[in-house]
Image (tube, rainbow, N blue to C red; front, side, top):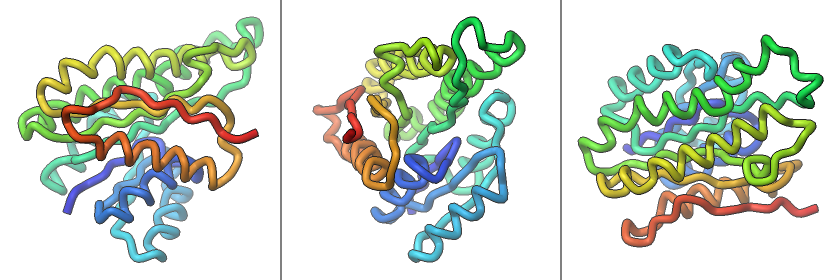
Length: 218
């Protein structure tokens, strides 16, 4: 059975994407800081007959992210798909941003993704297969002054995906991001984003894309 690891699983896009892959026969591992909430999400998938595991992770701590990847790889003989979905959704302008929170926001929004990709890459490359999927955002293309740290983080997600896409492609690993250009307000939008991730993962090797853009209705 193939393994899908979600880092920063939430009730929207994170859960929807995990469910989309679970529906294709993947074992899914959900992870986030709040174990209780993550177990509740896992229960929703288990009730539908999916095979689900739960782990805790702090996306702001590189050692926590690296340890999670290593643990899941060891337990399940590798990770076939890694989905990084964590984000610090702080609303703050440059003037409002507390100085002691900016580095934290960056650590969650882009630092965790970089560590996750770095940790998962060696075994994916050794196998010559795997997908690293990153949840991007429209603020990474058009920054919003009221969500400055998130905008910088999403710009980083896009740069990370584009920066490693080609060298990883040459080694059989598909790196891709869905740039979500708007607020995901409902399950319809979350499921649509999940479908975008599935389509990216399913692309034939000669037709891989690094990015798709999804614009929620309304």
